[in-house]
Length: 271
Image 1 (cartoon, rainbow, N blue to C red):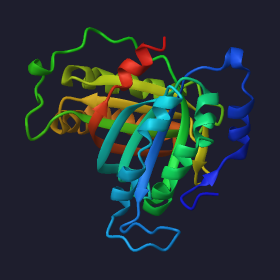
Image 2 (cartoon, rainbow, N blue to C red):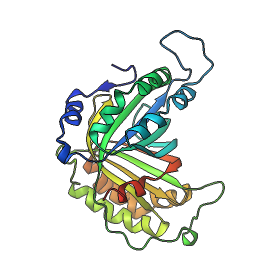
Image 3 (cartoon, one colour):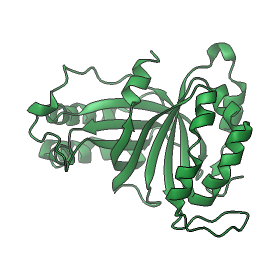
């Protein structure tokens, strides 16, 4: 058992027993909180921070060996909704199959690198996710033409929403109240340049704190100012109070600054 989360053995069994004929891509969404100082189980002295240790862990070789790809990495700039923990970084890995995710765990090179993750990670949630259909989009607005375009000081800003609905059966369906909210929010967000990188149903949480989730959504704005124009719009705020808060039982809303964002392409190429 890792020191930074609880394994969901029921979901692990699903990953292990999925019929190969029905297996396919899965996106593992990682929410990460680091230790201030890395602590190695062998007692070695180190000046590494928790983040440094996780950087040393990053298993690009084992990922490539099983056909997986790191498609999204971002630092958390703002945690707007959600009680602790306060997350530090988000990463998404696309695996070609559920079986490939498990196969990587058994590789010697992965196990060898894992001591760095154990040293640096304070807490993590890893959500196995499958793409959802998203609202039909109009032709995207050119970011050069939006009210708050990207600048050198304020570039692309991704909002990550991790959601558990009050409807416990809502993993692949969205409650009516949330649909009502989306219509209003979309009417404000589209002119401000929002782009949906991917909406996902949460198939299971292989590692976490015991909570379950229904959906994970990535929406990217041209700038933080563009997001704020949407966030503080009076019509959107009213719809949030009337509909979104009714639909949602638990959530994180995290403002991210991506350093890697190939999420949209990873979903589009899998269709």
